[in-house]
Structure formats: structure tokens, C-alpha cells
Image (cartoon, rainbow, N blue to C red):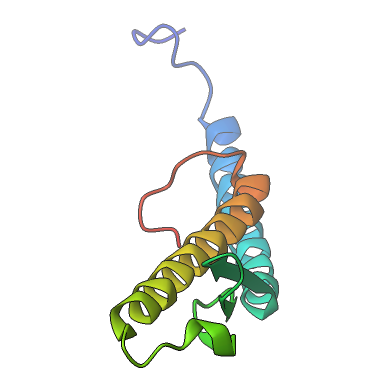
Length: 117
């Protein structure tokens, strides 16, 4: 045995592991892209004011529809309607983000990877 005990062999076992790890990472990336595309197609719905304002948003966080009940429209109180829309949109964004986090967490084992999505 040479003077470097514990480093016996040619390192072939280590070299075989690296391509396997890279392949696994590539497969995970492909799966994540597929799941992300599916989540982006899904819709979430959020309401405010007891259903006076409803916002539908997709997983890309694009607003698809805003529904306002007639009783929510008061020409003398536009600020309340604006607030209801803001609340509903923000809630829809949170739901879309949660949908994506849940789907990606299933792949990553809930490991927090900064900048992932």
C-alpha cells in the first residue's frame, strides 16, 4: 500500500458516482419543469368582502377574472371596492404561490432551494 492510507484504489468508484449524481439532478430538473408547467395551468380563487369580490388567478399569478357583485359597487365609497379588490388579488397570489410550493415540495422533499420558483 502506498504512503496515502485510506486513499487506496484508482478512484474509479468516486468517478462513477459523479455522472450518476448529475443524471439524477437532470431528472429532478425535468420533473420540476413538468410539475411547474402543470401548476401554471391550474387556477386558484380568492374572495373578499364575503364574496363581494372574487379573483381567479392561474399558477403563473396571472389574473384570469375579477367578479364584482353589484352590491359592492357604491359610487360614494370607491375606496372600499378598491380595498376589496386588493385583498382578493393578494390572497389569490398567496394561494398560487402555496400551490407551487406544495407541488415543488413534493419533488424536493420540502428542501428550501433559494430562487427555485
